[in-house]
Image (tube, rainbow, N blue to C red; front, side, top):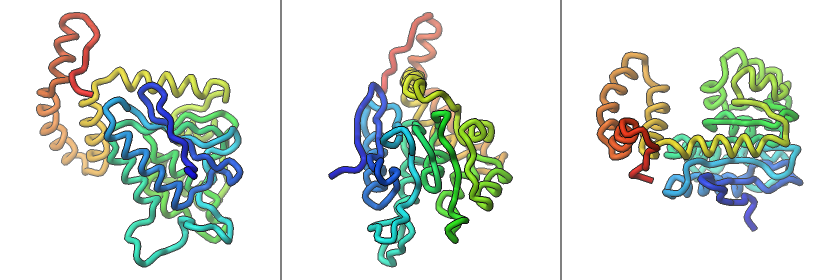
Amino acid sequence: MSEVLKEQRGAALWLTIDREEKRNALDDAVLHELIAGVEEAGRRDDIRAVVITGAGAKVFCAGGNLKSDAEGDPFRVDPNRLDNPVATLFRAMENAPVATIARVNGHALGGGFGLVCACDFAIAADHARFGTPEITLGLFPLMILPAMLRTLSRRDVVRLSMTGKPVPASEAAAMGAVSEAVPAAELDSRIDDLVKALAGGAPTAMRFGRRALNTIAAMPYLDGIEYAQRVLPLLSRTDDAVEGFKAFNEKRQPNWVTS
C-alpha cells in the first residue's frame, strides 16, 4: 500500500506523505515514492509545480523513522547501495524542471526540515514548529546540512543544529526557512495562488531559469556572469521568448508555444 498519496490539482502534482500515525516520518519506501513523484512531474507537460505535504494538521514530516524496529530508516548503511535515498530525493528536486513547493501543514523536524529547505518555496501554517533535534539523539543533521546552508544564514544553521531547539513558524519565516507563515485556514488558498502564478509563466523560461539558478549559485561570481551571458542569447531565441515579445508588443496575453 502506498504511503505517499499522489493527486493532480490544476497545474500542480501534490505528493502527500500519508503516515499521520507515524508523524509522517521518512523511510526508504516513502523516500522512493517521493523521488518517483518528483520525476514524474518533470516528465509531464501539464504539471508546473510539485507540492509536498504531510497528512493531517499536526506534522508535516518528523524526519527519519527513529523506532528501533524501523525498516529502511535513513540512518542505516547498506554497503551495497551507493546513495542515501535522502540524497537521491534532493538531487531529483534539484534537477526537476518544475518548481517545488513545501506545504507545511505542521511541524517540520530533522529530515522534514531539510525537505522544507530543499524546496523552492515553502508556505507554512502558523502553528508549525521547525528544528533539527538530532543533537539530542547523539546525531547531527548531516544529510540536510547542504539544503540548510543554502537557505539559511550560517549562524542560524549553527544555532538550530547545535542546540536542537525548534523555532515557531514566525521565526522560521524571519530567517528565510519558509516563504511565509499563514493561518492554517489560508494555507491551501496561498498554495493555489502560488501555483497559478507559476503556471502563468513561460514553461521554457522556467526550465532554463531553474537550471541557471542552481548552476550559478554554485559558481564563483565572475563565472556566474560568464555563464549568464552565454545562456541568455539561447533563451531569447526559444519559441516561448518569441511569443512573449510578440504578445507584449501586441498588448495581449501570451499563448505559450511549449508546455
